[in-house]
Length: 501
Image (cartoon, rainbow, N blue to C red; front, side):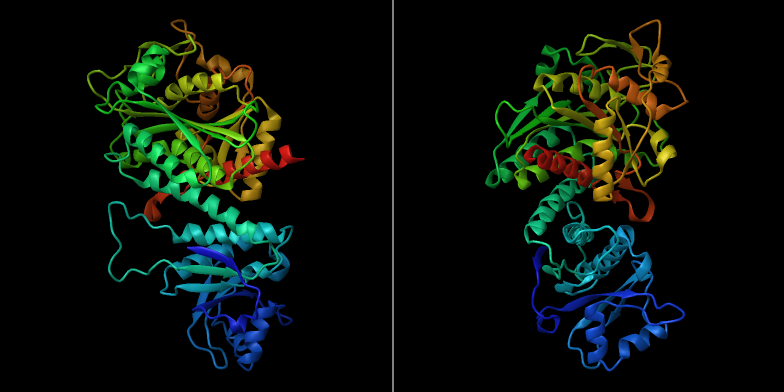
């Protein structure tokens, strides 16, 4: 899907349909509608206002109504509810964009002119509106096709969406780069585990790097089992030793700044399938554990979005990829593992494997001397209990870094919420058999997982994002969401803007 700005009269638009915002009519008066709505109403002899008053057009945020023919109007109209004009804010703007984008994707219209970006939601600049709208249309356009082809009569993807906006066209280039990163993450997350395994991830990272060569050079390092053994990455290796597919550590490096500038490092949990190992999970919903690599998928997606944006930063992306299986060689509850850092870990539960692979990846990443390091993982079910599917959890001993991520999440509407990482929680990891155990018990399970990781990031400006509730949708619309690619890319954009000033 291509995006463009449209600066002529809407009547001169030659595409298939017009996307028109509709506000609610107050009980006592006529609603203030958009300029395009009023033009179309006038051309139709007042029919639009009549249909709205009669309830034939919905004005509820995100709800849409198709008018395939209207007297005096040559275009199909996709009327999109925006709610009350005096309550129209960023959230309702996004709802309207999502509704319009989904309706367009389910139609056979190949092009559209969107007037939603010609509105003024509370506290939103034109640049923000245009980027958010483009991202929502790109998000709705996604279809998984790797192992299931579309039906012959399936609605095709739209070729182009044009927007009415005062924002510069560079915003659309930015949106396209971020949308690409989101699509990378969603595709990786949705792939079945018999295809997307650690070796595949390593090969795919190289393919993505090769494809990005028109934007910038990306260097890819892949550590196999022998290389990890030489570095004593025993925690990562322990998780993967029960699988027929060997683990990999994958590192990608983009240099958009001075060679001496410290990089921003994204570290992703890449458990391509999680049975729980010897501490095996219940069978119900286990197929969803292909999504346990969404931390890896999202850092890869954000990394390549940043590459396409050609940000003036040095950025590295590190993925700890393994498959957690209950083979006869699998690691066991009761094992004591010596991590790459030299710290020992008593394994109480082999289903707490994400922190095991991440601890070695975090230790390895310290050699990059990060300006800041953020790990991203579908780490704990407790996070889903705490925050549901609406927000990721952020934990850090660096409140300024947490604040940066919170702000990036708010600006991108890919939100996170800070949980405490107080020292008082650390004692839950105490054991007499090792430096720590890999689970801290039932209370504050998400926080104690963060405490575990914090022990491998001493001296680093580091934050942890638990995306267990945000990374994929459950139920009827099951699939990878691509979150938090938007948050991470916004954070990198903010760092780039800060460096420029």
